[in-house]
Length: 400
Image 1 (cartoon, helix red, strand yellow):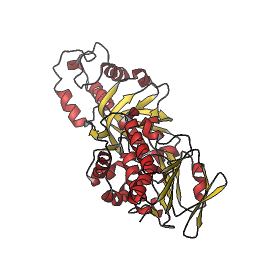
Image 2: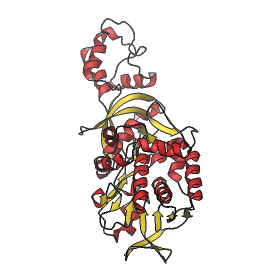
Image 3: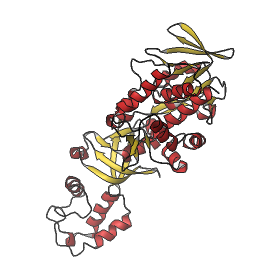
Image 4: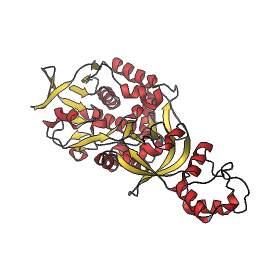
């Protein structure tokens, strides 16, 4: 059995190792177009590798995938977070859960994950071919021909795990197979707010805001970080993922709404009602656990004097403060991709794939895994989990 794995990333290595572990007689080759393998694993999680997320309930797990979640339910029934944790532990790498449910190797080093894959591949005699760009793939009798550097190579099975592409042109080599390809666009990105006064607060963060896009009902909760170019943090990255395609259509010019406190207007009004007799300066005393710089920014925005005391706030001024705290609006002009976890949505339409086996419905000798599929998750280890799941299933079914 000759098996080609196109792509030396997370999904590709998982597929190759799974295939070889299940069939020691299989001849498995990983083709990687660049000089390095597992490059995204290397930089993920700030160099610690956010392997997965401790969301063990499948119904909850699929909610973290703006595209592909429902179809992934079938796949997760066969290989999910529980299986991932055991898979790594059985091969000598224990994972730890952090407060936000992200899971990392105990070593806190992505190199631990890379070493596991490279050592395992070496022990299993998996061939790794670098600088091997695929020019074409063709059906041939009971297998597949791959053209690399004008050389024709035959394989019984081909697993395509070549990762996402920022442009449709990057998937041209797949067009000859007549798959329906959803045009790729970036999925995880931060919001650019050039020359907005908020950027002067760079470094300020809030632990639990609610973010949304004006005109949409989708809201995301999480921490937010103000940067020198705009806004970042999980609340922004998750929002970008769920609106990736719509925001691409408007060329990333839109209005985002921020609830700084993550609470309702009614709840906030109750807090203000308790301050009616308070004689302290609004500028100096804030009772909402907001960093001083952000509090002063909000008060300046709604023209509250630094000599104003709580008990003398007019109803109009109270309303302005409350509205800004729960529904602050910012014009966004552009995006910055999140380099640690650059993800695209788009790719091979999942209707073309048997999600139980990752086999192509057009040709069972071709299987798909990873970000080449129209699957993308929010930040927090969900994209790697999709890679492990689809990679494992593709590898397993390539040797059955």
